[in-house]
Each structure stands twice: as structure tokens, then as C-alpha cells.
Image (cartoon, rainbow, N blue to C red; front, side):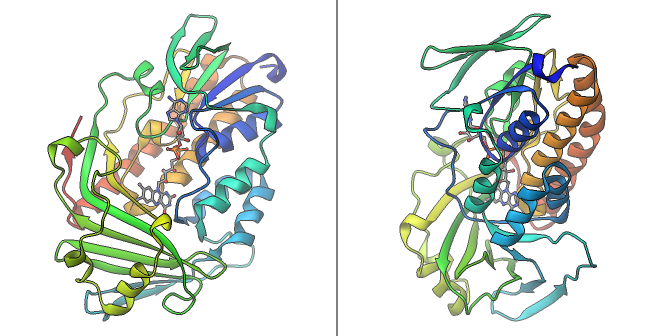
Length: 361
Ligand SMILES: Cc1cc2nc3c(=O)[nH]c(=O)nc-3n(C[C@H](O)[C@H](O)[C@H](O)COP(=O)(O)OP(=O)(O)OC[C@H]3O[C@@H](n4cnc5c(N)ncnc54)[C@H](O)[C@@H]3O)c2cc1C
């Protein structure tokens, strides 16, 4: 299709939406990226980016990939410990010449690298999608502030609680994965050296991980198994965000000290959910990518990677096909089996390590 004649709207300026918008803008499409927040979220904690995610960035825009390499630490060792601190196993990671590394990095650095590649005029903040309508010739989106957009294709990159998804598949429910997680970032260079990913294996209802994310900062994640009380069912953030001290006390002292040294502003807590595999990724001129299409348990660290793979695939099919319907069909044929496999294996691993799954909405 002639890219400059094609108007594409994207809902959600998370990592999937920003990457897709930058790729499509480079290809010459007319792109509008809508984000409900006053600015794209550059907070958050540490992220493990697997090699496939780095490849998806490198194939679409090598400069973004290089900025991420410069800002984080290549992962060099996974170490699994028991709750007494003893090492159960460790796995070194080595890279061949020219092989892209898996990275340990702050989410802020990732989003900043993605945003630098996005033409600023594409981004519209404070734009919360309220409803969508489509005909055989176009799509119209209406926003909470009364504004509207119309164009040729609408992409839902609006995360796990997706409004766009309702126009593609109805009745999708969130599944609670049985864990409440706290994550934080704190200055530290001794407990967790660069490149090392430490996991305190699940036991006595908890587990935890720690990794250095560049500079003098260490990321930690602390998970407790907890049923949701009724008022919290389906909520992303719990009402009570304090870490129970009796649960934290199950960690060895050195690990606990890293968590206790973190200032409250650098700690976030949330419940973990996934969704069932969707039967399709598009309906007419509306298509889903990222968590909106296949939110999954973080156990395999494939969340960001799969959103970037979607973005790369969709941008390539749109550039290569003369009509949108054909491009979306090819995108779905390529991506659906892959994202279903990610969802299946993430759930399988969740179950193996003892997580319990429960439909909540
Ligand atoms: C505890 C935890 C740990 C994780 N660790 C990792 C990891 O180590 N590695 C990894 O690769 N992945 C990890 N993930 C997964 C990863 O964070 C997600 O898969 C990824 O951020 C999804 O990106 P997204 O852009 O698809 O969605 P989001 O990041 O959710 O972005 C969606 C955007 O859409 C906006 N939006 C929503 N609704 C509307 C609306 N109606 N109108 C306008 N805008 C809207 C939101 O404000 C948001 O900016 C983890 C997830 C969790 C929960």
C-alpha cells in the first residue's frame, strides 16, 4: 500500500505501542499514538530482556538496540539459591562474537530509547480511548476529552486491561496467577554484581529475584503467594501495599537488607494476571499487539519481547501488502501460533513452580 496515504492510530504508549509507532513513522505511514496518561510511563523497575527481544529491536532499528546495550548490563550468570542462601545451581551465559546479549536494565532506559526514535508530533497524551466504531472503509476512535480520530487502521497496544480488545474478542477475563509482587530499585553494588541474576527459589509461600541494572542500582522482586480478598479481585494494585514483615523475614539477612534499604518511592506492588490465548488478533480494521493481545505470566520474561516481535511483524506486513486486510491476515497467521506458545509455556512454567491460577473478572 502507499504508506503516506494510510492513517494508522495506535492506542497505548507502552513499550509495544511506542516501538510500533516509530517503525511505522519511519516507513512513511501517517501515525498517531494515543496515551491516556499525561506522559508515557518512564517509571518502573528492572527488566530482563531476552535475546529474542534484542533481535526484534535490532532488526527494526539498530540504534535503539545499541542504546539499550549501552544503558544496561548483559546478563552473564543465573544463580538459583534456597531460602537459607545456599546455591542450588548456577548457569553461566556466554555470547559468540556479534551475538546480541540478553540485558538487565531499568524500564525507564528502555522507554527513553524507544521514545527518542519516535517523531514527537505522533504522540498525543492525555487521550483516553472511550469507544471505537468501524466500517468497511475506516475506523473512528473517540476519547474521554471529547476529541476523536478517524483513519484506516486502529492498533490496540493498550496493555492487559485493554479497551480495544473488546472490539476484537468479547468476554476476555483476567486470570489471577496467585502472587502479589513488590518490585524496587535501590543503590547497591555489592550484593548483586553486574550481569548476575539471583533467584531465591520458591518455598514457604515466597520467592524473590535480584539483578543489577547498570549504574549503581539493583532491582529486586519479592513475590508472596496470596489469595485476593473480594474488593481487590481484578485490581492491578492492592489496597494494602505494605510488605508483610513476617514474609520478608523468610529471606536471608543480606537479601532482606537490600529490600529494606529501598526508599518507598522506588517500590511498586501489583497482582500478577494473564489472559487465555485469544482466537484471533484482528477484527476488520482493528488489530491487537503486546499485552492487549497476549498478557502472560512474567515467568519466562517474554512480555516486552513479544510486543516488539508483534510490532516488527505488523510493520513489515503493512509495508509489503497492497491492502490492509491482507496485511492483517498475514500478521495473524504469523504471530498467533507464536504468541499462543509463549502463553502456554509461561503458564506451564508458572504451574511447575507452584503458582495457582484463578479467573477473577
Ligand atoms: C511483575 C512483572 C514483571 C515483568 N518482568 C518482565 C521482564 O523482566 N521482561 C519482560 O520482557 N517483560 C516483563 N514483564 C512484562 C512486560 O512489562 C509487559 O509485557 C510489557 O510492558 C507490555 O507492554 P505493552 O506496551 O504491551 O503494554 P503496557 O506497558 O501495559 O502499555 C499500555 C499503555 O496503554 C495505555 N492505555 C491503556 N488503556 C488506554 C486507553 N483506554 N486509552 C489510551 N491509552 C491507554 C497505558 O496507560 C499504557 O501506557 C513483567 C510484567 C510484570 C507484571
